[in-house]
Image (cartoon, rainbow over all chains, first blue to last red; front, side, top):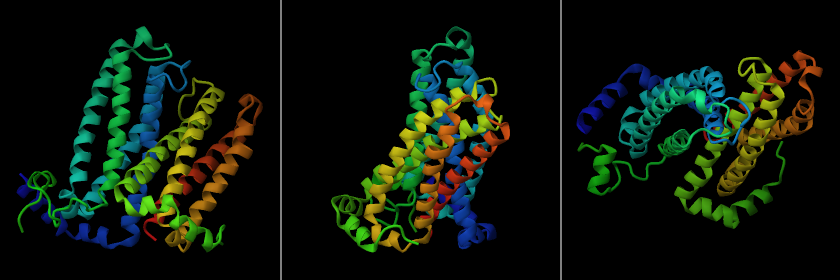
Length: 185
Length: 161
């Protein structure tokens, strides 16, 4: 599996656009800047929705209304964030695919996505009964807290990708080398 | 133009805070950079929810006074955390920052943003919004978005300079 992923990364690395993005000081850095700026939009809106569920912001306003009204802006932010994220990966595929932080980030992203789907389904199925309460029911508050925790993890591991403390060219314990996706040269 | 002398930055880097950030990369990356980014997300949410409401893009059926009031609470928390984590990070690489143009651009943008919020935006939005010309509200929202996006963008470019 790791071998296959690395081969795919090597193939991406060899494509002209991958080289062009990484070698362009302004293009690469502006993609990264846009990726960070969209944190303000996507996570900013998401945090406000989660905080409302926890009863910490606008408790007098319908929780479902806040979730629905902020959804479009949040999704626009996420789309731009994912596009720029894919471009950043595309620019440095062989380094990133062997980053243990990137791999943890992907697992946390998947967790956040599944949590968001479950949260939305549960919120809509029970909306009428608690919508105007200052706090959402316990199971939704748990979902909101989990969402905040998972996204804090995504941001942290995303930031840590830049650090090579546990990269494959270092002397790593076998389990960590496997988790980072290290393959023999 | 630098706001503080080089001596201050030399002192900051040799301080206990500078020593911790410089010596322990894990603490610098998590308590400094990650907390800074997470606070940026909260600040972004507070600024954008409130400004998008003033522009009539979101929560049109919620009074803008309510949105502005609630968002401001979280703005203050986020700003405090951003400054605290920013000071910690800056102490570790203070001398390098003194010579970094993007750092000074960010400091000017941050000062402009803080002055704008506490001297213009907040006093204006504390009252009844129906008494304010709608175009003034929209102008304040656009200015606010521009200034805080500038703070975030120049902040990111510190690492590239």
